[in-house]
Amino acid sequence: LTFAPEKGNVAFASASDGWGFRIDQFAALIADKLGARPEALRRALWGEYYYQPKEKKVTRRKPTGARAAQPMCVQFVLEPLWRAYGVLAKEREEAQAALAQMVKSLGLDVPEKDLRHSDPKFALKALLRAWLPLSEAVLGMATELLPSPPTAAPARLARLIPTLPDLIDLPPPHRDPVTTMLHRVHDAVGCCSSADDAPVVVYVSKMISVPVSTLPRQPGDPAPEGREVFLAFGRVFSGRVVE
Image (cartoon, rainbow, N blue to C red):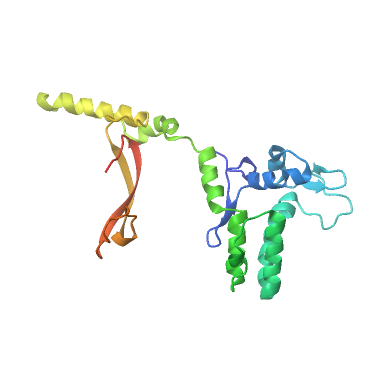
């Protein structure tokens, strides 16, 4: 596996500010503006590619006489981000006006109360999260590039369930049931079966203690008492987990 931004398998993000993007997202954003296909722009937005506005074409040669010309990645990806963060150096009213103008030019839907927040950094985060949602960059990449559970199951099977052990030495009363169950588990995990009668195999990756009051409740349920419960995060490899 080769990680390459132009392939869409690399995301650039700021977890603290809540934004993220992939090169193909910016390619889709500026395709109409440049009159180009997003697929072609994906290659040009990473590396030494330059946009020549007069000819309306992309070239690997820096435009003649354009000392300030920047690669397309800098011009169309990084500089807009730098301009957004640049509002933090302005006075409050000037920063609010600049952010409002950016929201309008980008066609974003940002609540007015967020843009007029007393803290310019809060307003900037609201704009960036609406413009470049972190969830779309990361989860979109996962859904597009990672194989689905049924597709990935055969490749994972050898590590999840190594070669079936030799059960010849088991006493006869236990030999067949155990062997049969092992083969059932092996076959179910191998196809990520969700059948009603499939054996349930779950890998619990993490458990944390949380106040029971933070868990969702059905309407009409009594308020829980002040106690804690374990919340588990797991991956279902076969079967169905029901309450």
